[in-house]
Image 1 (cartoon, rainbow, N blue to C red):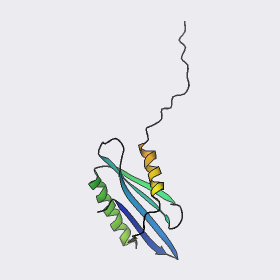
Image 2: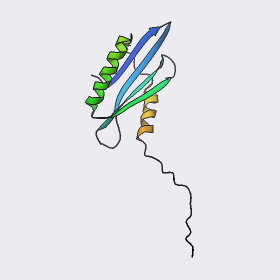
Image 3: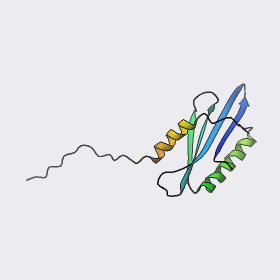
Image 4: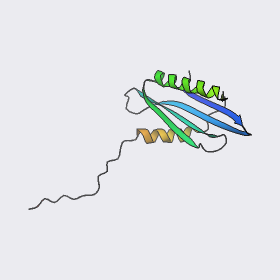
Length: 113
């Protein structure tokens, strides 16, 4: 199975699109995540969902396979067009992997003399 997937479905004259990609999380810890973006083709995605983390890419691929099977039953078909929402999913991945900012303020501790 590929680590990317694009599915589309025609409904009431509109094309609904779902793009999925499997990516490693930072840190060389063996954790991977599955990101899915959905919306109307030709527009911005209306939703981005994240699944995981998974221990290894093959576990994430199994989840992607299961999602693809469920969507095929709902009328979605594989689309060979290039992914158009890669940057949106890359931004979501950055949110997941950036280091947590500490909530430290600018406090000056002055012990009593």
